[in-house]
Image 1 (cartoon, rainbow, N blue to C red):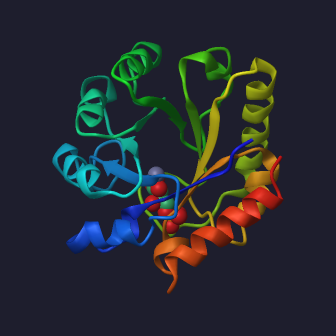
Image 2 (image 1 turned 90 degrees about the vertical axis):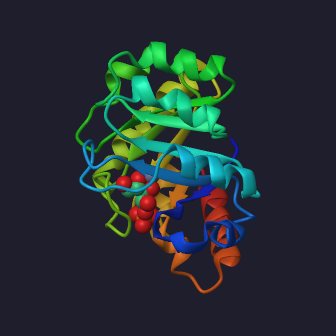
Amino acid sequence: MGIRISPSILNSDFSNLERELGKISNADWAHVDVMDNHFVPNLTLGVPVVEAISRVSPIPIDTHLMIADPDRWAPSFVEAGARSVTFHAEAAQAPMRLARELRAMGARAGLAVKPATAIEPYLDILNEFDMILIMTVEPGFGGQSFIETMMPKVERAREAVMKSGLDVWVQVDGGISRSTIEQAARAGADTFVAGSAVYRSPDTHAEIDALRELATKHQH
Ligand code: DX5
Ligand code: ZN
């Protein structure tokens, strides 16, 4: 099982995103949080900024859409250059149709669930997705505490992926740091978003390597 680190640029310096992306060049993906102040109570960036950063990013862009009506907006993020587009189960009208559309455009399709949303309804249609994102905080802000009680959900998702024989990645997002990544890895996550843990570190590259090493050591 591969381990991937996807630092979130949410807590980076938005006045110089090219430089901030350079700080995570040894990561596997750059996690970009798109918030519309409707699905979540915060507003970040949209298609034009994703287009600009995908032109200068040293690593592929992993967009996390915390927006209403992803059925309408998600495909534009593929056109903007995102290699992975994750939308929320709670917001999508037709998640299967949308995932098929994103894949047909050449992107990886991810399905995200908030902490209080069950993963079970989606485990029968795992073949429709490239990644399942299990939120380990309520979406909306960086720097929140990891919700440990999400680990059984990660375990059930991992079990279902293993049974299916599919290569669906299990991502965790929220409160991931050196002190929490071990339990998420043990539970079965293989793709880790870390925002403040990386950007608050004086040495972002070393922090990414340390997170990858811990996750690899404790992987499911
Ligand atoms: C929260 C975002 C996260 C956030 C993670 O809604 O989806 O990606 O940036 O930040 P940390 O790692 O600080 O919890
Ligand atoms: Zn995110």
